[in-house]
Image 1 (cartoon, rainbow, N blue to C red):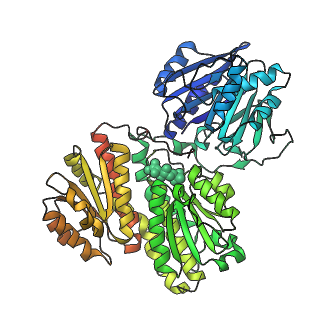
Image 2: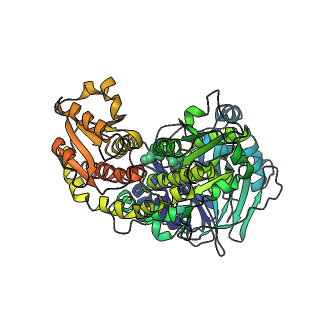
Image 3: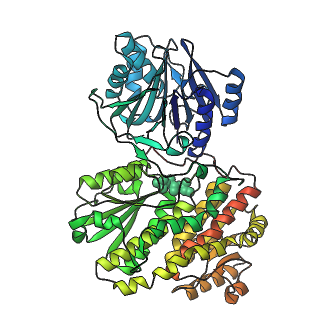
Length: 611
Ligand code: AGP
């Protein structure tokens, strides 16, 4: 959703702001803008559409001021247009604001300002902030005090940044349930909604807590609470390499990230396997201490692709342990009657660590006494900082909006969590668990093998790039992979696709099958292999087109399918992690063939920070 960047003291701000906004493009946006101090005033440049529009405007005007802020907007209140693009300013153009999230009581504040004679120039919930801060400044507050007083009046989940022409060199930022991280430089201070936007300048970051107000100047950063009491927020070194957020010669981040998966899954497992004993140690389980012994049930809560990982996680935990597992959409779970408690382990799964529904669910169950282990890919994200224990997936920054390497590393993390839980609960011996480590360690080679079939996948993609609909089928641990394959195709190619458990096909979707419908079936060996072959027969006998994901050299599947996407042989438990690779590539090559904007698909945001 909206992206925020700010800088003071690092040289001319406008170029850094545009570069920072480019690093935030992946969040999804429909307009963009910057504010830069110029002389004793503020230059505001805003454009609807892609960043290139704003970049051209900035290049033409070339503002030279050294303090400024930039924003990419994903419309919530007011349509996508230049009029609604941030920054917004007060009536005199002396105070500017950029904002992420939603001000829930904006209508009443707007009415109050209108009654005082304020004229609005946008349809957003954001603009009130500039007017409110300006009126506090007129009443004699200094800038930080004016911002704090304004912030105390707001309801909702938000982060915003204020810049005033009368306070040169200074940015004042507020975080309340919407991500905001500060960057510490030499003689310069930075802020952003996401870490990747700052990596080019510093890896020393200062994450903020909810209710923090930060004052940034070139001399440093001071943080207070909303009442002005100073608080200390420690800095953290972020291990991500700036190179990881560059395309590195690839046409799209998504393809780069698909190809990074073998290394990403290895990185996720390596520090958690003891080479000496061959055992797995998930520190997150240690971190729960005595609370772990009380756990009698478990629920994965997540959204989108991460929810698909949860479905596979259920399969793993239920197969390996004695625990009953539920998987729920975070947005549904939050509003159910039955939620947490000390015997109910909750595992939120979130790539970004900032998905509002997942965070909301997590906060609710924590308050009810549940132990919470977050599986997350972004260090210092809200999920990582608020959970009782964490499992960091080591995918590195994922920029493509459509998740790929974050998903496969989630699957690895969940499999390892299940194995360790199984040993701790006495459901597996150390020796039994250790026999599963060797195939796990070899997983990267199977993924590399799957990637070597990219030409085969591309040919199939080109054959079906004009199809109007797709059906994806899978069973058991590969049912979530059918869902994930369909989601990938929908997200980046805009082709309608549905994923189903193959056994459910007869109960409705079979009516869709005709000679025009490509049906993608995950048909690798395992306990439901024969059943899946029967499902393929059912599709064939209704003239459906079968595209099967199968093990290399599987002649039975080859004889039944119209097209195959081959993958190397692996254990059934690990097969989803390999089988999803050709489905990611299939979606990618179809979207590429259709000329879609693969890294920033329409209407989508990388991290969904509103309900
Ligand atoms: C994945 O391709 C999607 N963009 C989306 O479904 C995503 O998985 C979902 O929004 C959850 O995000 P999170 O993992 O950051 O919480």
